[in-house]
Image (cartoon, rainbow, N blue to C red; front, top):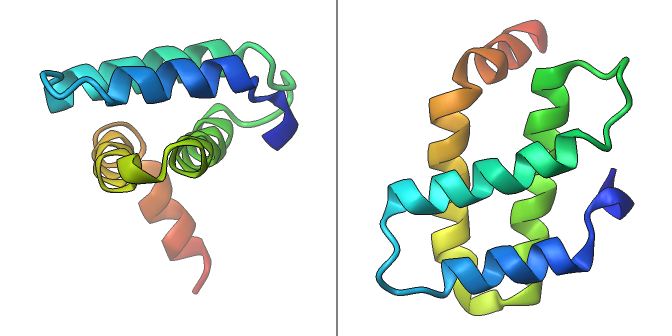
Length: 98
């Protein structure tokens, strides 16, 4: 999955995150748009929530690696995105680890 993330997508997302006038909601929307593009490359048999979670974290890592000064913003936006869209899935994962 890591290799399915094109550098141009990472660069584009990093450029959007560098806009100081961007609201948190706009950052989440840009992240969601990038994830929608990536989800189209995922195998059909892969659970959607799992793929979204993995791609969200991989994309955040790649953007932070690409532009380290964005680490704080990327982390905050990623956590907010996961809390807003995948919280139930993450809680179920944690429950199943017991």
